[in-house]
Amino acid sequence: MYIVQIASECAPVIKAGGLGDVVYGLSRELETRGHTVEIILPKYDCMRYDHIWGLHEAYNDLWVPWYDAAIHCTVYCGWVHGRLCFFIEPHSEDFFFDRGIYYGHKDDNMRFAFFSKAALQFLQQSGKRPDILHCHDWQTGLVPVMLYEIYQWHGLGNVRVCYTIHNFKHQGIGGTEVLWATGLNQESYYFEYDRLRDNFNPFVLNFMKGGIVYSNHVTTVSPHHAWEAHLGEFGYGLGHTLHQHEHKFSGVLNGIDYDVWNPEIDRYIPEPFSKADLTPKQLSKKALRERLWLQHGDKPIIAYIGRFDDQKGVHLVHHAIYYALHRNAQFVLLGSPTEEGIAAWFWHEKFFLNNNPDVHLELSFNEELSHLIYAGADMIVVPSNFEPCGLTQMIGLKYGTVPIVRGVGGLVNTVFDRDYDTTHPSEDRNGYVFYQTDYRALESAMDRAIGLWHHYPEDFETLQLQGMAYDYSWNHPGGDYLAIYEYIRHK
Ligand code: ADP
Image (cartoon, rainbow, N blue to C red; front, side, top):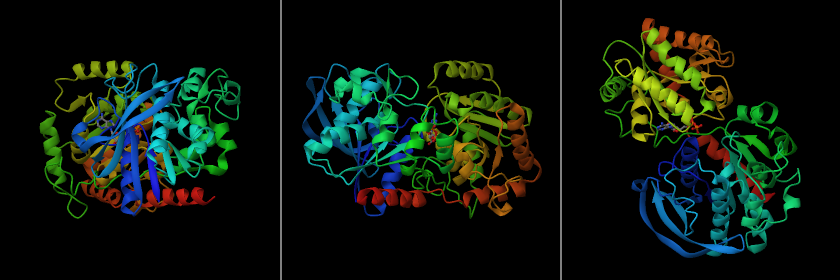
């Protein structure tokens, strides 16, 4: 099968969060199974060019219709750790992708509407005719819309679309200007409830809704979150749309790429370790302490790695720092300061705790450091308000770092409480789960984890090994996605 991924991220060259990991990892799995995969991305000025091999100009004559003119683009091509990627660079005074950051501008809707249009125009002009387009999140929600309404009449009639929603909170909102810019025009047609009109604000169009309505199949990134989005509150207003399209909606649990996240081959840690020999994990712990100026001693390290977004339960992250200190543990935090208010709060904490030898707060995005933290920590806390899948707990499990998570979304599908889980026998349990969003709930789970570490080290190690035994690679989800592709291709 010939599959083209269209996305705004692909790790490690463009990564703000889990979306990047998924686009890379899934593509690699599909290729390993013998399929042809290409990835179309924006050419951002701030991406990690050091992770692209052989970047060269592949196509210099791409003209993307935009309002009543066209924007000239150059398409570059290169390999990101073996994956063939095409990067679209528009030459326009909007400087859509030359902003120094990936997201967070007032005109994000126009930037990614343009990218979606450019990706389709590129396929059409270059003669590429994939069997499947796999689009991701709101940024590419307009791809299936434009494919169906415009490009199927220009040679792309046999292409089918799988659309994956990684986060319902960000849906992509636009007004009529998006229609006029992309050539969809016909305001009254697209403003119908059954098409792109936002379910709550009748004056705006919703890109993600367009993606759901127009795709051949829609997934979100875990079975439990599929249920939450459809029938609970986490569809952020799209529950009814999902309900109308439930026959083509499902949850596929993300995988992680064990070529990237694997303590047996990780080049960012001092010595490899595995479930056959966990002892060298201690060297990672030592290296982590030295790197972050923490004192040595007989204490567990608890970690948090993630974006600073309300979604992540930051009030509980904050509480976890102080509770860990109170319970004779150390805390390491690696947070990307994406939301200003939350970042300011944690900057304050960083200065406040600066001289404390048991805690380090690192407020940046640092892929290399994240590897050492996963390897060197004893536990990782994920207290999210909602979590479509969550990768950090799965990576933690692979590194023998016991997850302490809130029971929502994909966390429910991946972490099973050592003491209270009723669905798995005790030898298959792998972490700690709490459900409420108050401090007491978090404390009770942390208490149990820290208590086991201090008083029953052998049992703690057994729990680590049970977690490491789980297979959360792309093996299963790769098969699930191929089954979906096959199904929509022949429907
Ligand atoms: P989300 O997609 O909501 O950000 P996930 O748990 O699905 O959350 O994926 C997060 C990914 O981003 C993981 O690979 C994690 O290691 C990485 N990550 C998050 N924050 C940082 C950071 N500050 N530095 C390095 N990597 C980070």
